[in-house]
Length: 155
Image (tube, rainbow, N blue to C red):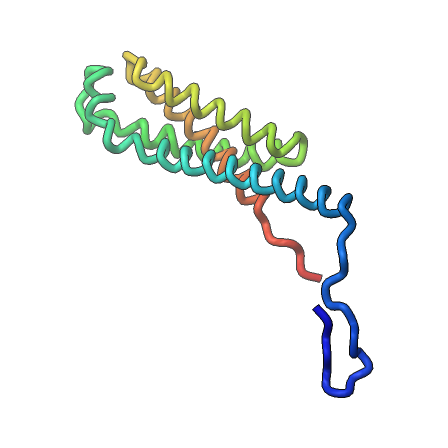
């Protein structure tokens, strides 16, 4: 780990400084926490992506649950889009007011409850409300993900 340059004054200079055991332990804990946070966030957004795509394959079953045909149930897509829009606005405001990870956890919980209750809906209005709730939670999640993962400012 010594640098042996061609006649430079830096002969014998150590490139890698020795770490104390306390610094190694502190760096190890921070690294473990960073890895854990990364894995949990990636799993949450993988689940969100799967959850967002589930509406298409289950559309016929949902229409059958509410006794409507497919062409007259397209309002659930509008409801989810309006929910997403309002969730993005709400998420941007709440991001400045509360703990970021708590906000992500609460919106994940909200989307889980909405996805769990969606197949139970027996009226079209209730189904539209549920998809709107899911849209709000997705809007909050996406907005906070973007704000949380923004690159550092260039100066």
